[in-house]
Image (cartoon, rainbow, N blue to C red):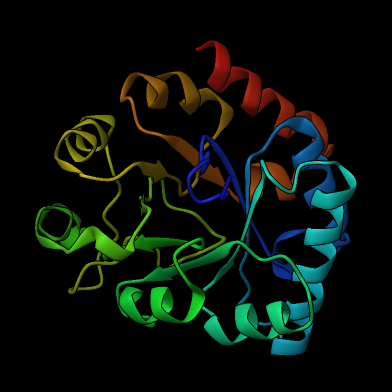
Length: 231
């Protein structure tokens, strides 16, 4: 079965070398996969294409070694070139996540094929209108947020006037009700937020620093997964 058809975004890690307090990215990914995270996104604004390909290779190898290549989706943020190059090198990459101002989703779908995953984030101030009007034929899920202001992506949630817009749990519930696709919410998400996020009935949460900067990433990841399952 295509991992696209079996997509699980309930526990989703976004990670790059700038998010690990100097620790190897692979070690953080292994901790998250071991703890039960079901989606890994490689994202970096500082790594070169070659470095991103190598991080993707490491992530794919870690997922394979855990016997979870058909369960854990591996995505790359924004860089269609990196996904295509990685696949050319035989690396199993399941898809891409882009923003509304990145490469259009229909082009991503054309290049990556029907078995690939394409996720999309829209600008925070336009999200309600966008979710109601966008053609979702090429998209598998929406990423929304931020729940809180976050240092890992300081421009997350900026509106056209440069103000940060965060999402309340009421906003998220309304987004879920009007969205034709599953929604994953992130941006400063903490363990204490999980029970209220579950109540919104979204498909999942995404985190960066809550796992990648934790003293013990595997324990932190396991606590998040457990909280989501049992909330």
